[in-house]
Length: 369
Image (cartoon, rainbow, N blue to C red; front, side):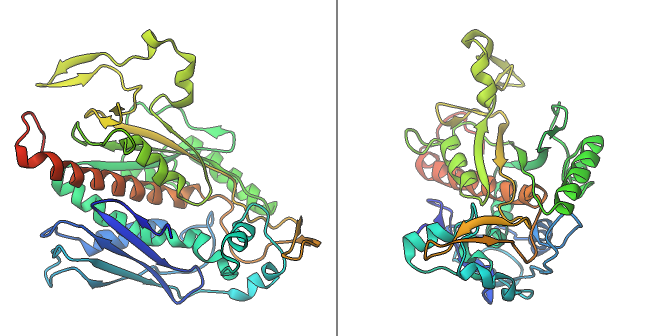
């Protein structure tokens, strides 16, 4: 049914936006990994609603409950880890009109077309509320990567609408990203983005943008050609997120403007290992990581829920007008940053475990732990 992600490090998320709870079951996590619950809570806090005036004012504490898989001293047992997050601030009355009218660019019609039934309140599984479960699983995936190979993942808002920060010369720190409620690490650009989001909200409208993400510290050799290329699974993971409309790796679409001689990443030996002078490939070649930073971007559309009256039809096909009610983000970008990081972590840790299962028993030379 499409609710499971991963091969060796597998997650299954469950729950609806306005149901009693949502959560995730994680299977395949290695044993004896120290899982810091304070870190889990901090990751969920970065995604939760109501964290600033730029986001939906739905008030959810997103306090995780660990039901299984951890020892009393916080070590993973190697068994399934179940995490539940209770919903406490549902307002289902705001969705009464949605029973008889399809919201433009939402999943209302397509869910009806596929299943013949849908969770009207909050959009059910199609709501971005579901991503809280992904962030919970991503916190564990980040922890495994940290202990396994020292890899880190950092995402930030690069642009909103037509406002774009200058190209980053190095990956910003978490402190720089979190310094603004926009999660844009360039202060001057962050101020302009914040003003643009406030203006969109005041006008009953919304705006979209682009998030950039960097995975640093992955060893060379992760990824499984032909169909399980590292960047292909990254793309699938990112495009599984609500409101995503585009993915690019490394030079992306801009790379099409270069000649091959300009675009190629030249190999050199540096610091005792093979490196590339440039990183237009974005950290992978042939679908396999090359040890450089994995750099990618994800495009998010403007939030589909707007307060302006819009024309639509209902299940009976009759034309009607609909003005959304309820609490919604005028821009999903600030809260999407930890979600992008979480999905990147889930892809990376899954490939790390798969690679170790296939290659580690044979002691391949030159491998980095």
